[in-house]
Length: 142
Ligand SMILES: Cc1cc2nc3c(=O)[nH]c(=O)nc-3n(C[C@H](O)[C@H](O)[C@H](O)COP(=O)(O)O)c2cc1C
Figure 1 (cartoon, rainbow, N blue to C red):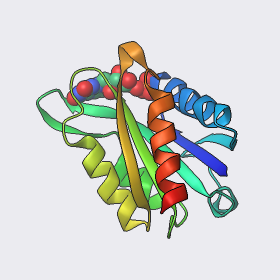
Figure 2 (figure 1 turned 135 degrees about the horizontal axis):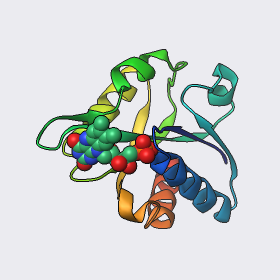
Figure 3 (figure 1 turned 180 degrees about the horizontal axis):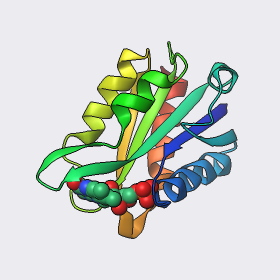
Figure 4 (figure 1 turned 120 degrees about the horizontal axis):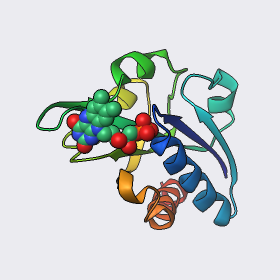
């Protein structure tokens, strides 16, 4: 499969998580492209059979916790109509409802959410292989 990994990162943790996700997909034999949500083109998405989209979490630990900037950058993405998407985030304390919120925004762009994973910033990428495998298996059997 052709896999596209998109990330939104401020300090680099989510970019590292995206690279771990990309490596895991490559290790499964897939063709993988990694880009930030800023640089992605319509053709990148059209050419992908499956996507992973990840962000960092921003908030005040107990309240206002959300996928950083997602209400701005998700609507700016090209259409995700019919695309299977695994979502992920990196966080420091607790991602709370952030992955659900990200999933809802991406669903409004036409994405079909097939898996999710939160990576603590102290162990970014840990468990990426199992996460990627379960998402890509769900795509194949869909
Ligand atoms: C301004 C700011 C607010 C944050 N708020 C939260 C939060 O409410 N909950 C949480 O779990 N992590 C929070 N974090 C931690 C980040 O989500 C975490 O460090 C993440 O890995 C950063 O990703 P990045 O390096 O890709 O930007 C916050 C970080 C910053 C800079």
